[in-house]
Length: 121
Image 1 (tube, helix red, strand yellow):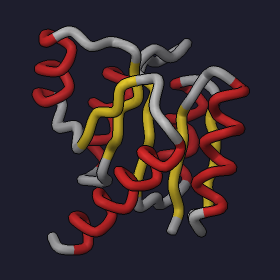
Image 2 (cartoon, helix red, strand yellow):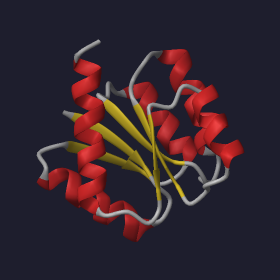
Image 3 (cartoon, helix red, strand yellow):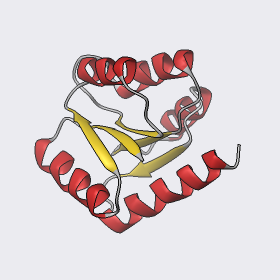
Image 4 (cartoon, rainbow, N blue to C red):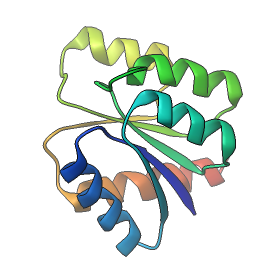
């Protein structure tokens, strides 16, 4: 299954891509919102993982574009924990929200959950 990870911190992106790869996912990594948009426009992904605070297009802006293209499940990664931010994600039709810091196992579990749920649609 193809997963797109959009994360601007190289060490985090590398760690998460490795954990997802070890869980048998094929992972493409974008380091900013503009690159993320190019990946989304050029490929079919079963899941997109977005950091909220990205250079170029931020995660919120990118999510708006994703929803114009379809219903690919989106998992937000963020350090932002305010209620207004959570509500904004819901308004943009996020599928899940994972607060940093988190373990690799927690990420893989959320990815599995979202992909199982999406197959049930």
